[in-house]
Length: 235
Image (cartoon, rainbow, N blue to C red; front, top):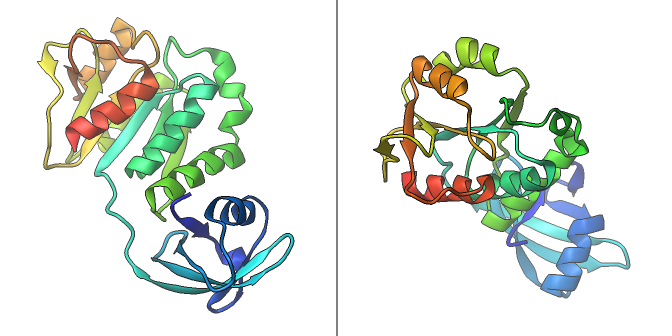
């Protein structure tokens, strides 16, 4: 935890917070703070600053808060990701949040197992937990928007054309002829398929919508490796 993310419910006064639970234990056991020490904090959706420890108890602490710094810039990308298996989803959400993705769409496709859509990992509280861990890692405060699209064709035909407007629209596909671009200067809509990739029908629908199929070389990467690799290449 490189930043303690704060929420409105934490404040007991205008500039004072009380923390319990996971954040309290982490601050105490990892940061090993004492009264008077300062740590880095940030207001969810807002500024970054410092918290000075004013009180330590057995199960809680209090801090005086000063916020003045803007959070890091977001990546100018909308990430559309075929829903991965639950264990992978946790890690992908965390890393995407840490890298600055502010819009993540989880999409169905032919090779996505139906059971994935019933996973407890998709519950809002579970996704929120991974987002918070990613933001704390990256010293960011702006929570991404995450939406679920369990129907491939309606999303591609009805929503994706508007989504890709004024962006560079890309779909990662190992059989593509063109390489994924580097260091782009415009916003990107990036679509990444499931393990095994999109089937030909899905690639056809995506390219007809206006996306350009691109590859990242001769190696075929799993989803949790491909996401940070492609984002780092693009930006």
